[in-house]
Image (cartoon, rainbow, N blue to C red; front, side):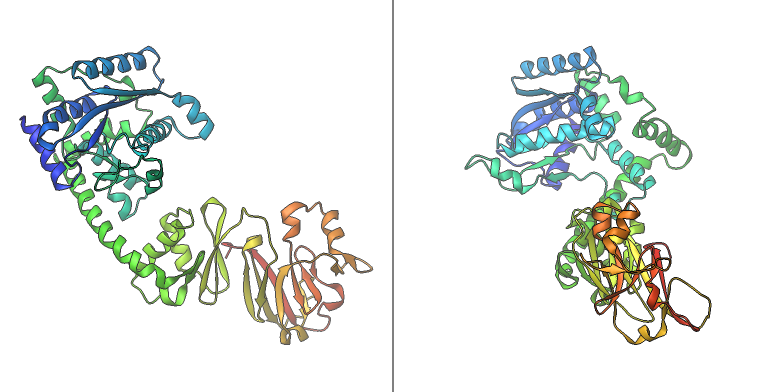
Amino acid sequence: MHKLAQTALTYIRKHDLLRAGDRLGIAVSGGADSVALLRLMLELWQEIGLVLSIVHLNHQLRGAHSDGDEAFIRELAQKHGLALISERRDVKTYAAQKKVGIEAAARELRYELFERLLGIGTRDRIATAHTLDDQAETLLLKLARGAGTRGLAGIYPKLAVSSQLSALSKPGTKRPGGMAIVRPLLATRREDLRRYLTEIGQTWREDSSNRDLRHTRNRIRHGILPRFERHVNPSVQNALADTAEIARGEEEYWAEKVARLLPQVWQSKGTLNYAQLETLPLALRRRLVRVAAESLGLAMEFRHIEEVLTLKPESGASLPQGWLATRNGDVIRFHELDEKVSDYQYVLSVPGKAAVPESRLNVEAVLVNSSADSEDLLESSFAQRELVVRNWRPGERFWPAHTKELKKIKELLQDRHITGEEKRGWPVIASGDEVVWMRGFGVRRDFRAKNGGGVLIREFPINGE
């Protein structure tokens, strides 16, 4: 057994990547790394007890060169007596349709194929040829983009495939340990794989796009990492890979702890208990907010998590993907604002502030002594009454400052060409059955302060403080 095969075997056993009886699909692109993976698995299949096959996706990005890669792989499969699953997808068209980069589109389509093969039960594992160099590049890339500790975990040795796919499997096809995509070469250097192929006389295909410096990863591979090696640390790839190993261990520990604590602070879907949250260490608070948001399908960056954690009472923060977080008392609520507006109502104290997520607005009421005439100054007697911020109701009327009589709110909004869901959710302030303030129109004419101070109504966008 070649020493490189022994290295791969040690890594496979350390991380429990493969077991006897596994039907392993080897993802082969034709490049040196994936061809080396194939040859190493051909050395190890009897030792482990594997059933091997080859999986290839022709990305159709390089015309005849892509077809040449496919033909080369077909010859490899025939030479070694292995079954081949080969498909073609137009990556460029897919990228345009999904509005993603070519690299991201190619990866999505590859993993779609892998997961489909695992889902139908014809394979138990798919092996990809990610190397220690890939790990180092990934870590630098994620660090530069602002990844947290989870991002520093880099590429995982084993990627479990969604259990939802098990419904596609034929009865009796499930294997111990579940379905997964595995990376047996994560502890192996790329240069060692090429040296191995040269020693055994195995050719491979070169992909010219791997040197295209328009791709960020290639700039890291051919420019940044070599400079690190020369000027900072000759073993920088190993150091980065070690960092990823440490981060993965940390993430596994925290994932278990967060799973136990989440039910204590995640009161219901979309609602966090702030009082309970603030009793915990900062590291746990950050992780709990991130995991809670992810359970709603919301991916947040570090700055968004910090905004949620530092929300003041009756305030809000804009989040990615059209979401909003608001805090009312000790309750933090996540709102998806792409949904149709339904009726809402928030109590407005004097003095006080209310977050109105439906309009991405904060409304504040403060007592002032100024005698300045203001369309937003409500007579002081309303400081003793209950005020609520809500959307207007059909049939309600309002008296703007510069008109002679009450008008239907519906007509006032139509005159300003406010339509659709924006019109449906337009905010007003009501006291009892009376609308006393309306966004964009100020305080109702007959309720405006006339002599001295009053209750000043102010509005500003959420995150506008």
